[in-house]
Image (cartoon, rainbow, N blue to C red):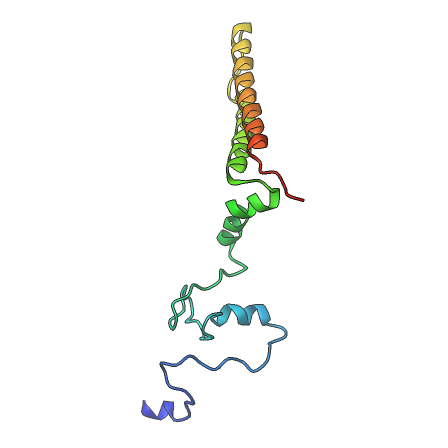
Length: 145
């Protein structure tokens, strides 16, 4: 067993030396395999660096992380230019519009009275959406020019 470690150039508790130059084809892959903070190579399947404890970047091909990346509240807020309260009101307005549309699919009207009840429910959902959108506009921070 001791014969296997004859040509080791570093001690086991020190991080391996970083590559001398940037890697052309696998630069993104190299960044995911090496800790950005200390330069140590990640253990296969590790979420954190075994040397400094910093968190590893999410892998680009992961389906779950892609959905989480798309539904990131801060990213959506910056993309739309809304504040936090304004975005919450905007999302509530979208939910109310979806509920108004779903009301027509969920309830069928056999009589005129049923049809009127469904229409009133739709109107209530659309009024809620209008109030939420107005609240979103009022809570939006003005842009400084």
